[in-house]
Each structure stands twice: as structure tokens, then as C-alpha cells.
Image 1 (cartoon, one colour):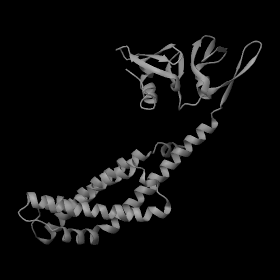
Image 2 (cartoon, helix red, strand yellow):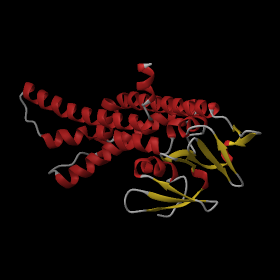
Image 3 (cartoon, helix red, strand yellow):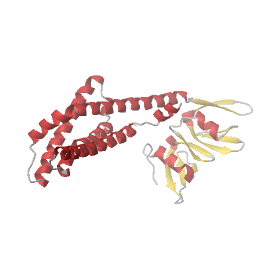
Image 4 (tube, helix red, strand yellow):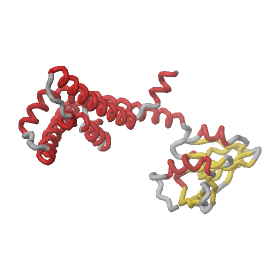
Length: 271
């Protein structure tokens, strides 16, 4: 259970952050190794040059971010290896051009692109292939795993709920519910054309609903974000939400963060 809890909190963004941290560590490690080698071999150490040739590790950060941003880690198996070769080559090309430009502008001498390319491919190409393969596999794995979790959660959400009164039972579509309000000892379930009373609690009712579209906005109310027309701030942390049917609900400051995370950007609102 503890392992599952930890794994469940790993997201693609976490992989991006970790990759960036690894890139920075490799950059610093390269600087330290260059310094130790120069001291051991008795030649001068120039940190500016060492940093320039270590910049290849920092280039991993924008490459990984772009791969994640455009979803290129979800390419087919057939396309994955060529893609890894392409981004590894692109990394070395950027590295070679960057070294040439920086040395041309800031140094007394410049490092030619052809020499930089040869050095980059000989020293870094295989390492970059391994690093990018690991990143893409991790992104693919955890993205797919999260999606599976969502599908499992969604499959457990009933499409209908049963509401009882003293004489009848009603079958209500979950997506037809606009909002639910507490009216002790009952709850009021509001749809576009009717209000139902059910002897239940908001806490128990929330567990029966799709939490991708339903959100608790107050200790006494739950709403369906698909029916939010707009919301306005009360300038004290609270909000007034106007639903599509004209009713207005209060969002308390304790629930405002969760509410805004649900409706923005999926639902266009005015503040």
C-alpha cells in the first residue's frame, strides 16, 4: 500500500522536474571532474571553458520539456527509436552551434562547429540516447498509468443514482444534476426541471458522483461544473456562482481553490 501511494503521486511533470535536476547535477559534476583532472595533470583550469563544454547537459532540459509539451513520448514503438536518435542528434547540433557562437562572441578564439560536432558525437551521443530513452519510457509509463487510474475511477462512477421519497423511487442521471444542497436531515438534488429530497449526507453523495465534474464548493453544497455559467468574486475569498438555470450558489474560501481548478480552463467564466 505504501509503494502504491508513492507511485500514485508520480506524474509526468514530476519526471520533467527530475530530469532537469539530473541535468543540472551532470553539469556540476562535469565542472568538478574537469577541475580535478586539471589539478591532477598539472594544467590550467578555466571554469568558463569547462562550463561552455558542459552546457550539453543543460540542453537536456528544454529538449525534455518540448517532448513532454507536444506529447512526442507517445509515438508508436516503431517511431520511438528513430525519434530518440533525432533528438540526441539535435541536442549535439545545438551544443555545437552554441559553443561556436559563445566562443566567437566572448572568447579570444572560437571553436569550429565541425570540431564540436565530432567531439559531441564521440563523447556524448550514446549517453544522450540512454538518457532520452529512459525519460521517454518513464513519461509513457506514468502517463499511461495515470490514464488507466482515471478510467478505472470513471468506470466505478454510476451513471444514475436512485432517489427515494416516501412513495416513489426516482432514477436520476448523474450528469443531469446541476447542484446538491444540504437541508438537514435531507439533501436537495436539483436538476434542470425538478428538485428531489433524499435522506443522505453531502459526504456520502459526493462519493457516488464523478469527481471530474462535481466539486464541493461549500459545507452545504456541491455543484456540477458543466452547468456553471459564470462566477464573481466577493473580494473576501468567497465567490458567487451563477448556474445555467439562474440559481446562485456561494463558494466559500475554503473550497475556492478546488472549484477554480475545476472550472478554469475547462469552463470559460467571467470574474
